[in-house]
Image (cartoon, rainbow, N blue to C red):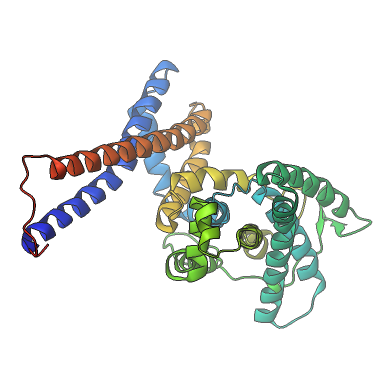
Amino acid sequence: MTSSFSDRLLGRVRLGGLLALAAPLLAIVFAAIVTAIILQLTGSAPLHTMNLLVDYGSQPRTIVMIINLATTYYISALAVAIGFRMNLFNIGVDGQYRLAALIAAAVGGALVLPGPLHVLVTVLVAVAVGGLWASLAGLLRVTRGVSEVISTIMLNAIATGLGAWLLTTDRLAVAVSGSNNIGTKPIPPSGQFPGLALIPGTQAKVFGFVIVAALLGVAYHVLFNWTRFGFDMRATGRSESAAVASGVNVKKMVLLTMIISGAAAGLVGMPQLLGASYSYSLDFPTGLGFTGIAIALLGRNNPVGIAIGALLWSYLDNSSDILDLEGIPKEIVIIMQGTIVLSVIVAYELVHRYRIAAEQRRVSRQLSPGDPAPKEGAAV
């Protein structure tokens, strides 16, 4: 009896693993079919286009660019996923990281400190600014019941205006020599995060901040899966009433989750700031927060899944230029990205429903009159 029970349990575990793999595979196949149809309708050969993407993406310099952009995407998606795990929708990651990067760049450019300490102070400033900015949405949620969706959207607009006001030559900015651009005072070498020569065949370096991004993913996994705090966050996200009954302070958890999400968002601009531009200027990357939402959905809030999604998204973004040079509309990349996200969401929902139906059928078979009831005292 015990052996039979173990076999059934092992079978269900294997089925769950197969279903987990089936969802992304179905999504990729569906996205490939849709993309091929669109390419054919626009007069572009699907196989030729795919070969271009593969060839360009396999070049050493392109690989470095993919990893660097994926690093920022990964941190952005983790910041969004922290809110998702507690059923909070932090749309304000975009405003949080831009404001954090601006102030951190100004502080980093004004300080004179030893190397590691200089970098640490700059990063801590970014974390603090991101967390404080996100805390405003958390406070509005717990004190006034304002939806974090509305408040973070408004805070994005406020952050944009505040950043534009601060980034002037009368305040934090200086003129960039040789151009019409303006930016904060450049961060000196002591405050820069050195790159890593990981990819042979090119002199381009991978952002050294990729190590911090990896550690952030580990910390995310440990927080949500191995700590009481993470358990309380997940429990609150699934059922606030049940969490209250268990003695969890829901308002405190909401506020802390928003602060942690904002603190992670403050790190989004650090790879670019400390590893490439060394200054926050008018051409500093924008929109990374909204991309993080799509990647968090694509990765199902799992740090490994998010990493794969970030690499895929970065690969498509970096490959769009080669399509344009070959006369293929680069907008096809946007269509591919949207189709993949939509396909993953639909596929996971289908697999989820199939899993529920399979479990119901299993329970029904066990409770059917034809199955003999287990003898009293029998081992299970």
